[in-house]
Image 1: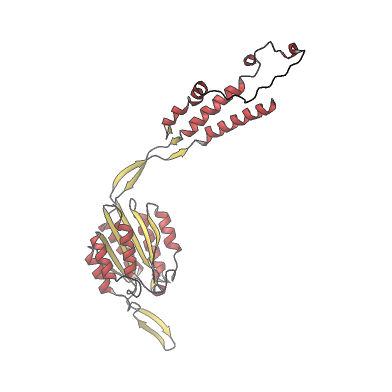
Image 2: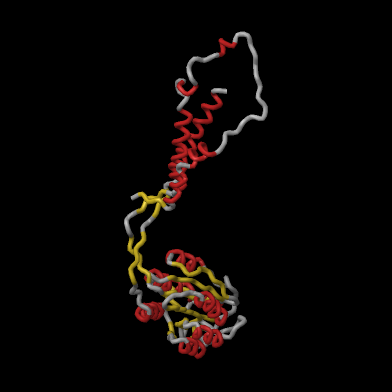
Length: 326
């Protein structure tokens, strides 16, 4: 159906008639007279108003004004109502991009991949399931950056996550700054639930704020934090002396991550492989369900350019006729 966004502008329709009625016509400052002995040759017995075609400019002007008023009312085409789920939850995902995420101790489809690739693969599927949540993305290394503000556009969040690269935010790990940035962005919102999912494979080695201090600020703002420690417990490496087992997660500060989660009412999870990481996100789906109230919206398509184009064409015809009579 057609809907007018500003129907009150229809009141402007009689303005030209009011202006003609109440405003005095402009008069030339000097009148000239031409006296000729054969004045009768210039006399026209037919009044100007009844000449053939003399009314067309006036009628075209009326139509042009009508379509201009219609265009100013912003006609829109309203589509069928579309159901949209809104949960009232703001969810921020913070992903570690430090150099240690380059360790290839994960496997996807039996192929070794680095930790960041596995995190992207699992987190993208998680984001896609979060219908009704506003989702944001923080990337952190030596510093923390807001990559995506809170939005319902899950596809954009997934795209920007998948485009992130190791070392993009620096080689170190600023866990406290990432939490602080999430507190700043989520604390100002009026959502029913605020959640931060922080994924890292190391300890806080950079930044301006300590992780536990940032967690206190988060708790004060009722921001729940789920922390995920990522990295295998053992890994086979080859060297000049043959194969040997190493622990690639020696730098993971699990104690701090546990305290961060507990102080805000969240949980700490350990992901040693891609399957465990995927199960963690499924567990988060259970802890923060996507059940939501249903809202409806109707897509709108602007139509004002059609009457505006007609008004411009009619104005052009008036101008052409005017110049043709000069």
